[in-house]
Structures are given as structure tokens and as C-alpha cells.
Length: 89
Image (cartoon, rainbow, N blue to C red; front, side):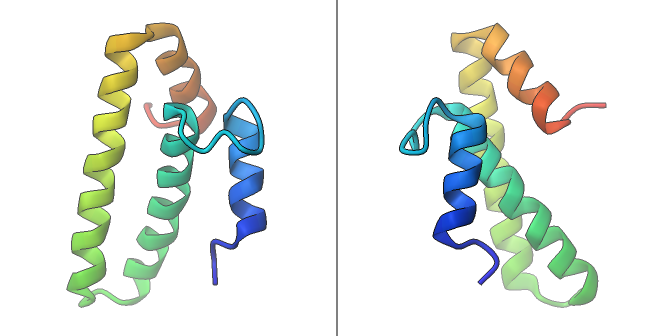
């Protein structure tokens, strides 16, 4: 599987406050970004996989909602996570 427990721990430790910080907005955004990148690569190979395409669209919406939440609550944390993940050009 592409996303095992060790990879999740790595993402949470890098973007969250600790390895067990699974609920912060930054760690959730980073996890969604990783999953979005994986599904995007999958869809490049399997163009007619519409179920995965729908799941990807919903995941992008969830990440967008988390980013909006973070932007409203703490603009500095928002700017930091966007810069770290390279979400904006």
C-alpha cells in the first residue's frame, strides 16, 4: 500500500507538532496533499477511472476547506504550510 503507518508518522512529525499530532490542520493538509499527489499519478495512467477521479475531487475540496479554516484562524500558519507544501505559484 502506498500509505502505510510509517509514512503517516513521517508526515505528521514533519508538518505537525509531534508524531501523534494527527488532528492539527497542518498535518491534515499535508496528508491530503500526499494522497492527492498519489491519486493524480494514478489518474495519469488510468484515465477512465471515474471513481478515483471523484474521490480526488472530494479530497481537493476537503483540503481547500481546511486551508480556508486555517486562513481565517491564523494567517501565519496558513502562509507557512502553503510555502512548505508549495501549493501556490
